[in-house]
Length: 209
Image (cartoon, rainbow, N blue to C red):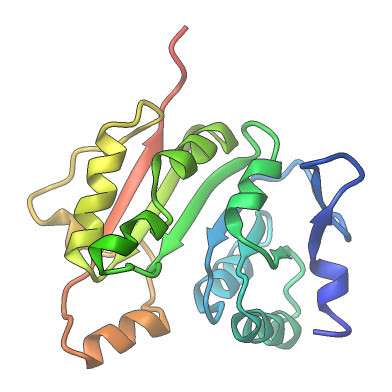
């Protein structure tokens, strides 16, 4: 946290809302993928290691998760990850238009009580920002083990003009993403008896001319 994070952290720029990594990516023109709430960082670290020609940004506000991610970056000599340590909405608001090739939201807090649903990350506000920051043809991938949150996300997506849900085979939403390896949250869900997950991929549509 003291030695590695300062070099990798994305901080506010001189202009309001401007965000930039303190250490620029080796190739700023390479596609950039965001993971929102990366938890312990296992998925983000693996993707970055397997795709050295892609830039990755992780947004996580909890110190424990940030520390685990930094350990993985240090142990594996990962050079293509930058970290944002505050609320991910602030990051999205500060990114330029079409800055991202895709984004992941994996096993977010489901806020199961109805009175807390407004705290769920998927909302018209965040979908507006994802629409603005993900370039046409890019993806938004969402995974959860909570059926109600999967339904919530689908309901919001189908009403939003920025994304489409490509046709999938019956029950295809239970098939993990290509190359998927379970996160520790998914493994915890299985131990607690939640044996199904929903893996949803949405595509950013081109704006109407």
